[in-house]
Image (cartoon, rainbow, N blue to C red; front, side, top):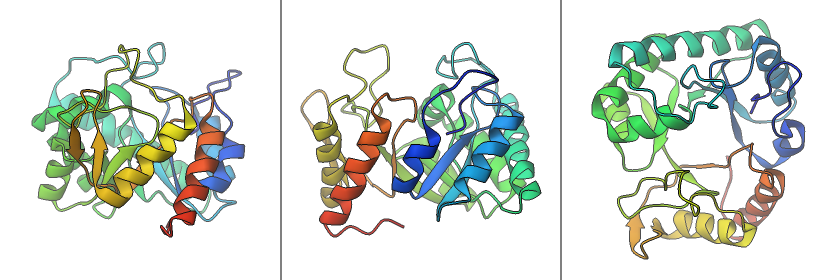
Length: 240
């Protein structure tokens, strides 16, 4: 959320808030700006949800979804700077952030590369060791966060497809994004109840579902969120 910038609007944050339990707010590097960050925090505080930082590469043109080859030290700085910015905005508004979920290419690179995962975990720990790290289930991000002593939530995706190694299908692939709400709902319920997801290659992949991600820039995000929320409750699954 909070991925609008200046006069440009991305997504419909207000409409999706009733159906989610936590939100990841852009910190001004891949999207967002100070005013948008403040406005989004204020909007989110009207609901019983937790807010978190969504730091990414400094790449507005690429929306943070282009891989940038950088060092672990640079990643550490990117994380500290952006977590600090959103944390300060939240403090000024009388609230606080509860988690950190890296964005886009940074998130996916850290899932594969231990040194980047460790830099992210270290940055979170140094800023506030009570912050929860959201990372892709079964990857280096989760391992590095756990080794650092952070609370980690294994994240699964409602609107993305998976590869047989448990990673997300690259967005360059035509089948990377799920656009059928029924398929998204079925995938979510399956991951939560069985601990498995079917890859594009047809194999079942073991997965831990602590938190479910839905992208705000998906045109059907609000509809997806409502459907998933209702189906989880219908299945007796508590959202908290």
